[in-house]
Structures are given as C-alpha cells and as structure tokens.
Picture 1: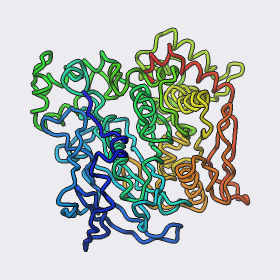
Picture 2 (picture 1 turned 180 degrees about the vertical axis):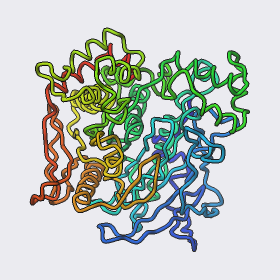
Picture 3 (picture 1 turned 90 degrees about the vertical axis):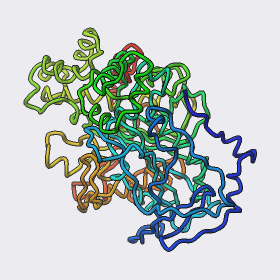
Picture 4 (picture 1 turned 30 degrees about the horizontal axis):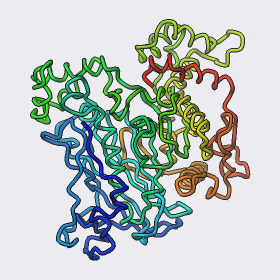
Length: 565
C-alpha cells in the first residue's frame, strides 16, 4: 500500500490552497530570515560569505517533510502532512536554524538517533525569493542503507560557489530495519522499501514548496554517493518509469548496492520478529513489531541477520518492480540528463582483506565472491578468466590484491554508471557525462595507503576539507595547495551540471572541457602533483575496451540476477 501523493496537475489547476502562497503574510523573527509556507513557517540561519561568488547563504534545517513514522506508522510508507493553510498564513514560526535528529543507525544505540528523523535541510542564497526559479540540487547520503546522516555533507559551499545561483536540499531517510524490513507480512500489511519511499516523498515535498525558497520545481537534480548513488539509480527506475518524473537530472557517485532477495527478506523478518518476541508467521507479527519499544527494535538492528538489510524487489506495483539492472535493460526508467562515475579504487575498500591476504584464486573466491553469495560457480569461473592472474600472459595485475580489488570494483562500482549512460544514450538523451575520480582522501590514505583512491575520496573534495564535521567516518582536514583547486573544480563541474545540464558551461577557468559521454569517454578528476602550470591535472580519457567488455558481462541479465544489481 503506497501513499497517494498530491499531483503536480492539481497544483497547476488551482485545486489546492498552496497556490495562494503569493498572498501569504510576510512574517519576521529575531531568530533569522523567515519562509512562510502557509501551514508552517521556518526561521533560518544566515552565514556570511568568505569571498566566494553568491554572498550570504541562509540555512533551514529540521524541516519535517512527512508525518513522523512512529507508532502505527512504523514500517509504513511515509504519510503526507496536513499542509492546509492555517489562519490565513499567520502561523507560529519554527526555529529551523539547526539540524534535526539523525535516523537510527546500525549499529544502533538507544538514545542515539530517532525514529522521528524524516526531515530535510535547505540552503539558499540569502537574497533568493519566491519566483526566482533557481535550479535545485537534492542530495541523498550514502551508508549502505544502514547508517549515515546528512549532517556531514553540508551544501553551503555548493550554493556559495556556484557560478549560477542554486538552491540545495538534503534529507534524512529511514535506514536498516526501520527503512528496509520486508517479507510477506510487510507486503500484505505494510510497505517494503520505506526508505526509498521516504526519498520520493521528500522529492514530492520539494515539488510543492521549493518555490518559496527561490527554487524551481521543474529543475531538480538528484545526487548521491554510494548507497546515495544507488538511490539515484533506484529513483530513476522507480515504478518502472510509469509515474511522473520528480527530477530531470541525476548525479550518481560510486553507485554501490545490491538488493535483498525475497527469501532473504522473509528470513530477516522472521528473525527480527522472533528476537523481539512477536509471532513469526501470523498477521499479528507486524502489529506486534509496531507496538514494540524503540529499545527492542534497536536491539534487533544489532543482531546478526540471515540476509542484507537492503532494498528488495516489491512486485509490479511497488517502487522496485524488478531489479534495477533489468529495468534499465528493458528501458523501463525515467529519461534524465546524467552524470555518473566512481573513484579509481572503490573496490579496495570492500575487497575483504589486506594485500597480503590475497595469494591464490581461492583467496579471491573466499573473500570477494563470498560477499556475493548468489553467484554460481560457472559465473565465478568465467569471471576469474576475465581477470588474468598475475604472471600470466596479458595480465595487467602485479598482485592478486589488485586483481581481486578490480573484480569487486567492477561488480559493484565501475559498471552501472557506464551502463546507465549507455542505455540513456539509446533513448536519445544527449546530456550524458561520466567520470573517474582519481585523487585520494588524504585522511583515509594515511590510515590505509594501500587502498589508493578509495571509496569516499570524492566526498573529501566535494564537501570541503575545512569542515570538521564527522559523518560515518568521513573526517575532513584543511586542504593543501593542490587539494583546494581540485575541490573548487569539482564543485564547479557539479553545480554547472545542476544549473545547466552541462558540467562545462560554468567550469573554472583553469579546468578542461568535460566532453559528453560517447563510447565510454569520461573525465578524470585529479590533482596536479607535478608543479605544472595547471591547477589540476584533470582531463578526458576513454574507458578501456577491456573494462567495457567486463561490464557487459556483469550487467547482463543472467549475472545481475545473481548479484542483485
């Protein structure tokens, strides 16, 4: 059962009082600038600029976009707030100067995080006003669908540095058991993939209200990294492309995910019910889980489970009617302008061991393929043959560790961006761009130098090394003289795409042109470490034909049905 969303057609037809926003009273507060939505008003916090382009930026945080998913709304699709205009818009002003509570994480701790976490955050140029029609960036954090918060990924710099003014939004969405508990009882009496439905509900809220912050609901770019990048893909294939698009551009960074099988989801549901002390096979199980204490659910989050806590295919009317790879192959997705890419060594973060733990093929089978338990032995043997062992003719690998890492890289991170761009191109989309991020996070590199340009390296540069906020291990330090230009270049490429559909239009003067995707051409973003005349060493390259061949193997229907991609 999915919520009935307010359609854009209703907004346009004037059947809702939200169109009366222009007549709403202007409210003021000592707390800061106020945006009045008619059913609620929010006071934000203005931060002075530090020499960038767009002057002061005003932040609004902890804004609910749906009802709190507690009590009987636990394990249900998000339910829309009552957004009826109250008292002609003369409403109480809410202090929105700070972040809201994080969603409950995994591992979970009672008192850390909250179920009442379906909140969003907005950054806008302080002078932006209703009617300005500024492009919007909608950011979804990563964390494997089990942890992570928007707190560590402030979008202040994106708004402040963008050559063309933009409005930025980030969201919290339900994670782990709270967002992705599934099984037959959930399908009959609840809602699977609640976390994905949260994301879509947040997009619906943005469509209804972003104009009040100076944004344009018809110019929305969704962006995310890792599980956030997977979310971009999943929202692109949502409902098999059968429902109206809520965005027209997408950026997917280090797309990283698998899905849970229906059998795994059912086993997890029974395990959770048993642990909490609820019936395991009757309809009362879900009612019991909804009535359980937060502490009991938190304890269940921390228990080993017989399957991943991840999105699941939820039937023909669900948000994921089939695996994303299958939907993309069939052309059942929303056509969007697209930027997709990955870090050079994403796979090393998840390869399952250190370099000295990979000596033989058996080590790769044990450590890499064991994390993809549905791969058949035939698929594993074919895969090993595609990655020649070190020392054999034509092998590009100096060590088994390099070989193992590239296998993991291709399965999870390297192929989906190329494949989605290819399929979008077949549908006639022209604004397509891919990239390889090739500069390591210095903080993580100092801890594990053998990982190279590891997973999350791009986040260091895109979210300001001077930001001291920690989020799920993403720690930042001040940029050095070669890191700062790459940060500025990366943010400029991203915000140029957000505002125009082309990362080159408003790039930095020292940056190369980013050519559109064609037969695998992609931008390599990297530092200048040669003391050359350029501030960065970024430039175009062609995806190696050998990688495209491997990606065609991993993205084939037979194999994606085994990897869950």
